[in-house]
Length: 391
View 1 (cartoon, rainbow, N blue to C red):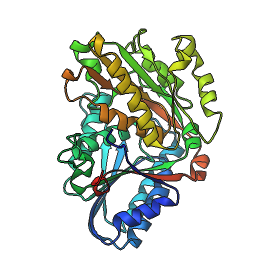
View 2 (view 1 turned 45 degrees about the vertical axis):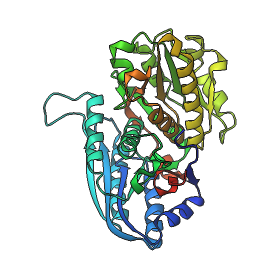
View 3 (view 1 turned 60 degrees about the vertical axis):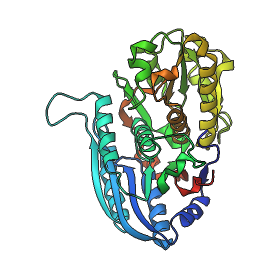
View 4 (view 1 turned 180 degrees about the vertical axis):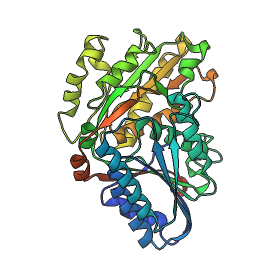
């Protein structure tokens, strides 16, 4: 287990971590954020920039990379809010450095329309190409669509941690001293309020996690499907189920948030998904997994353990395909991303495959007033760097 020991802070403890991380040293910073409508990104950046400016660090270079997104339908108020947020993010970061915008396109220079998967892969590559000699990389997922931040998370980890094995007692998470942190403005209630509508007919596969569907040699392997459930995502779940990539013979292990701030949240989700998962597919209640709503590393441990147990038990059947569909809140989804990164096989000789299919919505809707009233808890996951040198 890569993150058997981990660095995770939330609330007031976040500033203490940043002070320790940035205090009295030189940094070359790359800050990646979404050019989206979610105002949580502004609160996060305000807190981050304030900590960096008061930490006493010496900034050799700092760059803000705003990732924009085409292909989504937004009403006028939400579109206007997106522009306002982008301007505020640039203004706040100007205390540290310059800003560059990279857009994940839906089409290419007027030519044939790109598939969503191809656009995601090309957009992710553009971002990864900006990673050079930075000492600190920050990925703020507060205003980034799920498929994009999962692609960026796993892509950055693959670049920083190409070998997952301990060498001469040194953890691969040291990543040559590069501090990679993921920041989240978490508000699970707001995540449930933002409506993801009109899921695309084309499923998107996270780059690097598609061999479980594309390789002919493993199509006969049994499948274990882990749908991570969240409010208002039943249409997306049904689109994945109806796409024929989840066979009727698949073992289904729904993942529910528990413990949760709302003690009845898991029960409410069971009711919401009763028909597609439990009536139609007759999923046994004993298959349910529970993941901590507010601790992504606990989600990572629960999901990774389940995936490893199924991989071990299905070895006698030739192999297995492990499929994760993330529909939950941001912290749970990030934990799932870590589990998939660690389980990602280096070759088909490993006798298992990992895939992350998602029916990305083509329309988002939310109340601007509700968005602006959000008071998120800031959480920080430090995933690589010198903090892991003694692990």
